[in-house]
Image 1 (cartoon, rainbow, N blue to C red):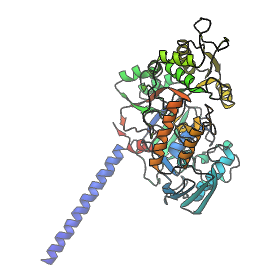
Image 2 (cartoon, one colour):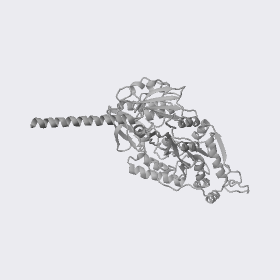
Image 3 (tube, rainbow, N blue to C red):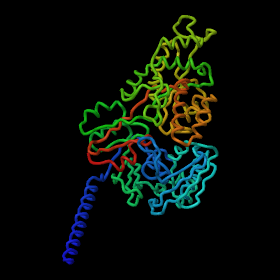
Image 4 (tube, rainbow, N blue to C red):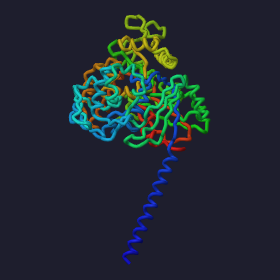
Length: 529
């Protein structure tokens, strides 16, 4: 009886193993069937070289090839990357605990010494102000990193999003990384490894890294095809030669939306832009731009609804006075910006800018002409936006003068503060600079585009930098947006959604605020449509 029982138990165990093996084989077979062998992405951005100073290649380096200590998810929150956890008590001393099984694409282990090397080597060789706040970096063991800052910075993690971690055993031998274009310069520790760059064909190839510590992504190979313009790129997408497109901090021109909608093989998602695609900036060190009544009058003369329809074909929103776009982390609703000609007229009169000679244009109190100047880049979209602002200014008797300059001259003028007003966008990454929430653009201790030196604002920025808990940061972020809404150092002219088209044969694209659809969620979740 016992022998029979043992036999039955053994047979039962064997059957379970066979069934389990069959189920595992079926799961693996299904996973293999669901895997995407190759994803082809079109772009109008041009990679010129592989070196770590090429800004376009670095977009793909950050998305595919390398890892920082942390990354950002689709909601805009910081999540672990090379660091499994981190802590700080005072926002000044930060301790990171690294994962223990990450490797470089050549098989060498990733250690805290590599990250220490990167934080010391890259600023020295490439420059940049992001790392000036670091006082010292220590690696007490292979899996612990300690960073001591010169002063508290509750927003320090945002700096780390841009860390291009490099292997010490390769770069310690490279004196000038700007000239290091050998494929070895692209060895990273991310989910993909570099395969090929064909400059003449405008083609980049990346392949899933077999030994990636978080497991291979669902997309096995990613090809980046570069196009001279969106017209030819859109034609390739419609022919099925591309699976999707990618433009950093941008999307498909709204001009192509009718074609996109008509094509049954194509779909699209709308991605809220975490930056401001067009903004008017005031020089608050000059009269009358230092007068909040004048800035409010300018805000009241603009037709934001018309701008939204003209420039983003309705794929966006009219902005609020708080500047920070809806959908951003810790966004709060402030007063919506709207056109109010009668109020603008009253406010301008109160500043002393009146039509003294009856010619329909406002003069200074001494009767001389008042011609506010708007600095603008000479590209077509910027000029169109400037012309619209000139028209709105004219509706309230302001004789605006447009000063168009090429990109180099424009940024020289902005950098030297030689402007009364100017038009420029902000990027998602730029919105996260300094203490976040556009403070890097606003605060005169940073970019300081409006030359904002108000002690009340400076105090808010410093409190944000000193905050290391989410609740306090959210309250301070609310106060910053309320400050923008009250003082109007800059005006968001419209908020927009990126149009991200794709071929419906694959579904599951997910965007994050910095790299759009080049996200972990896309790499691991994309599947057959």
